[in-house]
Each structure stands twice: as structure tokens, then as C-alpha cells.
Amino acid sequence: MTEDVFRCFQAIIEDREKPRFEKMVDGHTGFLFTDKDGMPLVAMHWEHRFNHMVKRYNDIYRIQIPNVTPHV
Image 1 (tube, one colour):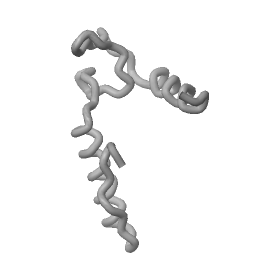
Image 2 (cartoon, rainbow, N blue to C red):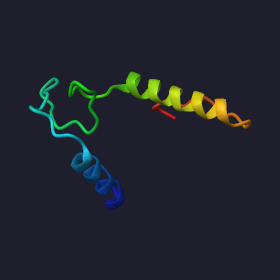
Image 3 (cartoon, helix red, strand yellow):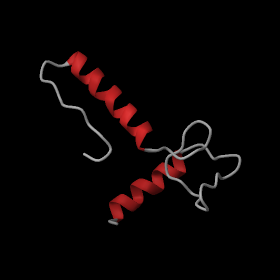
Image 4 (cartoon, rainbow, N blue to C red):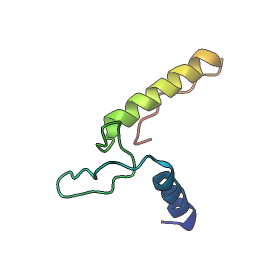
């Protein structure tokens, strides 16, 4: 991990709202991105967000962009 990536992740953690208690999933805690209930975001959440962003962009601009997935 580069220093820039580390600083980016650190900023995300510092800027987010502190959970009342840390969620544990399969023995793991300290998730970087969580939903409104404090549960970790999964690929389906990201895919939905990306689809929404692409749709909004394509509604505005003439040059269209293709669908984006968490794996692209």
C-alpha cells in the first residue's frame, strides 16, 4: 500500500461518524465503509452506487460511459 492510499483510508476513517459499537462479522471488525446500520458495504452496494452515478452522468452528457462495476 502506498503512503497516498494509506492517507486516503486514514482520512475516510477520521471523517466518518463514529459507530456506537463496532460491528463484528465472521470475527472481523474495523470495516472501512459501512452502511447506515454500521454493517460493512458489500459489492452489491457499490454496484448500485456505480449504476446510479453512470445513469446520472449519461442523462446529462451526450458522450455516454458504460456500466461500471466494483471489479472494473
